Image (cartoon, rainbow over all chains, first blue to last red):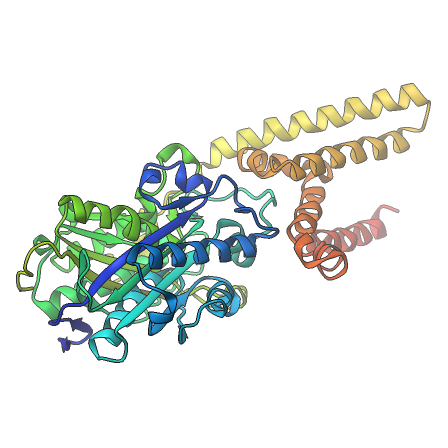
Length: 342
Length: 142
């Protein structure tokens, strides 16, 4: 493992994702990627009493299924890294309570999926863990209630609003060979473009995503054509156009290889405004659909850039702007010998 | 001027603007229809039970609020409001929805700290400003 350039970690040794699993709610299961998820629920309560318990159940199920797929007992995992959107990262803490694994809680808002994955790869590469488990979750109703309004409050949302994905994703990182290999990670800086509207997070996060992607290209000396797919977490219909424009201004045309998880997870007619968002958005699309496509050979090398709006209700009410961060991880199909990252 | 150099100003070109005209027309038609319905209810009640027009109006507003609460509990009011916008706020229906939605939302924290304590979360400001405005107007039109 070494740092290349300013913000990028390159993993020369073989760091694998041994297994990954996803659990989702009804709308996600009904979406175009529904068939790629491991566990799906018919209603938002997922058989629990409250929405918070439902979110916890989603993460627990994703973790259990991930360990089951890898054929690994939780006792054999050296480190658990997780985060979510609730205050105090409540979902992750309560899921960790049930696991016999040392736990580091991380918060990166919707960038948590790649934040935990990058950190896990670094811990494994550094020899501090042989096997590290990562997980993240979000739930539409718990996020609405915490960050916006009561779920049933009648407010007219603008077209720029996003729809929090209900789901959870988990992955097991280690040195034991698996089907996917983590090649590099770029840790983003917090960028605040000065926007204050929590119902337009795509525009608030796009500059952070562009900054991380550009820094990644510079650090490694790569260009968009070196990747089969560059995918952002939840920039949605608004932010995904902005990030392309920002990168084009810097001389990088990513249009041919670019997509956004928030645009992939729902059908246009699912009434989700500008698209999906939330920690689970990038997690379930990557761990569910994209890993499947790596297996199929549709893509060989992915650059997944999870985008997080570091939104605090109190700060927004005090008229402070919304900081954002984006972390990117390069993941490859491990079928063949790794060709060198340029 | 590039987007990056002047983000706050240039980004507006990428943010879809609300359909003001369509929203205004929908709000006018839906709000108007609700008011017409409430007026008809009031007149019908006034005739049926031979009560004063004021009592009949109170009854009509109560019925409209009850309808809003039923729609909220059924999970339909937010869809209706997304369509109707300001039209959904006519006649106390908006306030009834604000109180009911907050109460439903916080049921998981119990009756006292949850339902009772949080019920005014979304509608409290409406009630406070409503009282202030009513008081001020009352000074001029007693």
